[in-house]
Image (tube, rainbow, N blue to C red; front, side, top):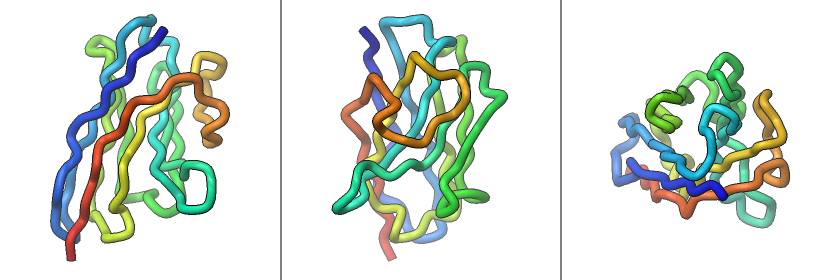
Length: 125
């Protein structure tokens, strides 16, 4: 089993920044492909960003590309999502997800085996 715990959410003004963290336990972290998702009303969870086992491969949704940066520290079993230039439409609960079957970044929520409980990000105007 894998446990994922998100942290770092909060309230920030438009144009501000936050850094989310996803801490993992219960499995060799270096073999987990990790992604961030947020709810998309009426659809499955919206992909935000993903990172491969080593961190060499990354992927971003068009809506966050150029503003968000994903990274990982396998020695600390943690993935980070640096969120800059935040917009009101970024307001959501952000979920960390882990996949054991893939190394390269994946974008579909159904590809992921493990989920955290989420951390709330609120961007005020």
